[in-house]
Length: 250
Image (cartoon, rainbow, N blue to C red; front, top):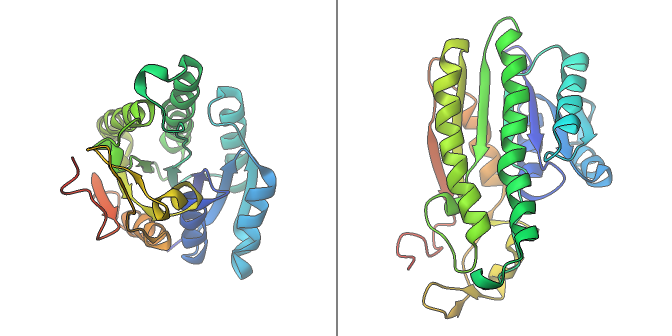
């Protein structure tokens, strides 16, 4: 295939890093977006022989000007955009719902939801105008797009909203051959899920250790989702640690 161009947000660590490295290994050119340039440079260095095809761009996805500048840099360097993996996100420390500061709620909504909107909009504009037209947007929904954990209202609310954004992108992108899909991930082993090894709060108030899976499973899933021709689309895919408590959660 002709070399595809991808943008991965939150590419400095965890799921974003895994996805970026998997895409680079599959022959993509990848723009690595994230707040910390040092972490993005580390991701690039991990790509080995493919590092020349990685472009770190320090970006705050919650800020429209920063997002638009980053996507303009991608277009200027590589001329088009074939894939956006909307992955950047954050969670709040587990506190009781009634004690959650409104500032923390606003911060999480700004990154998880507004950031995904801004990046999708910037990608949409490029994909609409390029020739050949079209591309794919994959949003990170998380298992929390289906079922919440205790004390996770802002994260869960934004991830439910991501599903609505994904559906809207699917519909509004049809006329431009822009496909949108969602990957819902459960307990990939990343710095964010290290607490699973010590035990996390369950729906009944108990604390239990939960199984995790190698995060590289997620990277391979992203590559698979984008391997389809644009006449086909995976709307949602759920990838989770086989033994995590999801099917029987609650």
